[in-house]
Structures are given as C-alpha cells and as structure tokens.
Image (tube, rainbow, N blue to C red):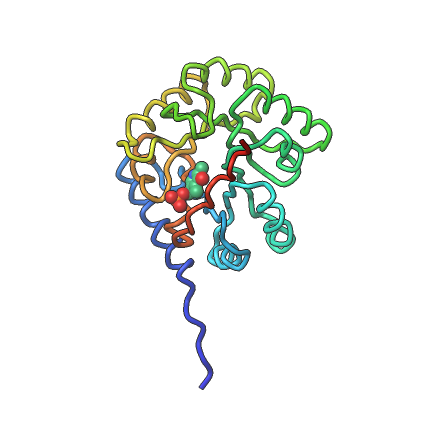
Length: 237
Ligand SMILES: *Cc1c(COP(=O)(O)O)cnc(C)c1O
C-alpha cells in the first residue's frame, strides 16, 4: 500500500483562522478582505513556512532579523509574491539587514531607529513600508514608543517617510482586557490618517478586528505552541 501523507495541521489551522477572521469581520460589518493575516513563524522551521505557503499563505511575520534572513531568502526564490513583516523590537545595528530583507517593518519605535532606518534605506536603495509601534500599556519590558510621546513621533515619521509610513502596531498588556488598548490605537491611526492597524494575536484577534484591525499577527494558532524563550543572559557584575 502506498502511504498517504497526512494533511498538514498547518493547512487545517490556517483554514480555521481564516474562517474566524472572516466571521469577526462580518460581525463588525466589515468586508472579510479588509483584514490581512500575517502568519507569525518565529522559532518555527522553514518546512513549517513551506507548509503554510503550500496552503496559500503569503504574508509572514518574524521577530528576529537574523532568523528571518536565514529562513526566507530561499523561499522567496520559489514564491516571489510572499511578503515578510518584521514585528520584533529592532536594534539600530540591525537596521540595514532589516531594510534588506523586510517588506514591512512594523516596529519603528524611537527617533534613533528612525535615523538608522532612513540611513539604511538610502544606502540600500530599498524602502520597506514602515509602521510605528506604540507601547500600549507603557510596559518597561516591551518595545514601542511610550503613549505620551506617540503623537509627536508619528507626526515626525510621517514628515520624514511620507506615504511609506503606513500605519500603527501595538501589543496590549498580557493580563488585561485588550479592547480599550486596541480602541486607543485605532483612534490614533484615525487621527493621523493612517490606513493600517496591526493589532490582534492568536488569543485576541476577533476583538482587534471588531475595532478595525487591518492586519492580525497570528502565530501559535497556526504553527502550534512555541517553547518558552530562553532566560535573558546573566548581567556581568
Ligand atoms: C509572537 C508574536 C505574535 C504572535 O503571537 P501568538 O500569540 O503566537 O499568535 C504577534 N505579534 C508579536 C509582536 C509577536 O511577537
């Protein structure tokens, strides 16, 4: 007997998440096509990304520039229409690599990074779309511009990057009702005339779609749970 390959759980998970996105959009009176699904493949092997590509997924999110640089260029050769979003806090010394590989950088969150990205864009002759990340709960361990500085920083980035500054991104505090945080970011996007709103993860994307998310970043609901991140390195005394 010829064994039949089991259908990938990734394909089934993607179908379920897409259906849930469509249902949440319809419930909010929005066209289902107004929400893009970013499949967050951080820590997952290239084969998992291939399975998602085979199931029709084209938008991917990664947290770390080095991991993305190792995983994506060979896939892009086979699927030129795929798009890579960087969604993890970005060090200024990685700005040039980020500009080289990303289609969208969602985590522009401080003036020094804006300087580094502008410089990298000029040197590389390549301009990814950019989004400002706001630290929705002003949590010290998270990236994102503090809320009190967000309006001025967004306006400065719009002046500097023009239409390439496409929207706002945020992650609400883990233990809180995300709805008010999502609504505050949606309001900021409206105030600044920005079309893209990247909010919502595996645990809360329907609530994000209800207030206007145009991109949801879903990892574990598609690719399965991830091992916990390693503890931070010991600080030298
Ligand atoms: C990991 C990550 C996600 C996806 O999280 P899940 O809970 O696995 O869906 C979304 N956004 C950011 C910024 C992340 O780091």
